[in-house]
Amino acid sequence: MPADPIIDTYSRRAHDYAGADNQASCWGLATRELWARLGPRPRDRTIADIGSGDGAALREMLGRAAPQTRLIGVEPAAGLRSIAAERTRDLSAVEIVDGRFEALPLPAASVDYLYSLMAFHWVTDPAAGAAEIGRVLSPDGHADLFFIGRFSGREFIKATTPVFLRRFGPARVFAAAGLRRQLTREEAAAVFTAAMPDRRVTVSEWYDTRYDTVDGHMAWWVRIEGQMLAAGGEDRADAEAEIRSAIGGLATPAGVPYTLHLLHVRVEAENGTS
Image (cartoon, rainbow, N blue to C red; front, side, top):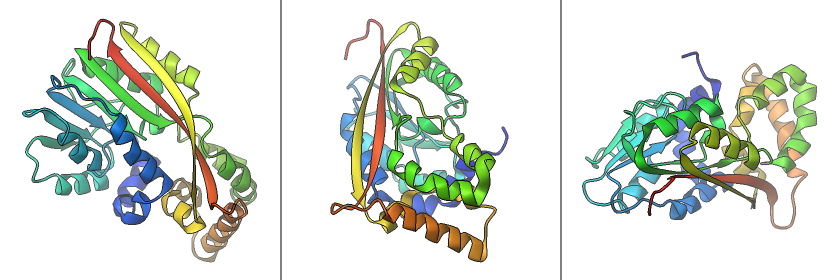
């Protein structure tokens, strides 16, 4: 499989991702708040976390799963897998493996509950990713996927796009934007329904505006790195200063806003019971 700049970035910055600054950011807080919305059943014996990152959600899930449940964390970024393996090494029920939505390293019909938090928007082929989820779910299996939709971060996009266009040009900016597959609710429903016509698929959406400092936002805003990789030294410092200024211009008394557009895809067996 060809190199993926997003996976490479998350692997290289794994310790930043797993660090306190990122976990206290709007993304870290929003992700942890989603833990309460996950729904493992007492009879689920194999649970898979796709895009499991540093393994934090797996530790949380283990405390809610029934005894003898096997938990599998699937993560494509080697740096994050290493952190997750270290943080879960005392948990014999947890296994961390290399994989991604489009090629899940799991047998067909082997997973009773599959969940994913803030990861599916990085998929390179949504249809293939959804088909793989359908392949690995057991006949009575179910899934919860939470990820960002098309309309996330409109404030930042409006403020920073002129800076990016001037410094990097349209081709680089549009290529960077294309690294993430941002779906509308209707598009997500169509993708998952087509991939799993024999299952019940529901998709909900909501908006969540978070406020932080410029430094707080810059700590998680890793996607700018892809647009800056060619810049170094003073050029990079100047570009980052200009971006900080643009983001700072959004400040309100509550802080700098960033609005998340969140999608929740729920997959159930057509005749399944909870």
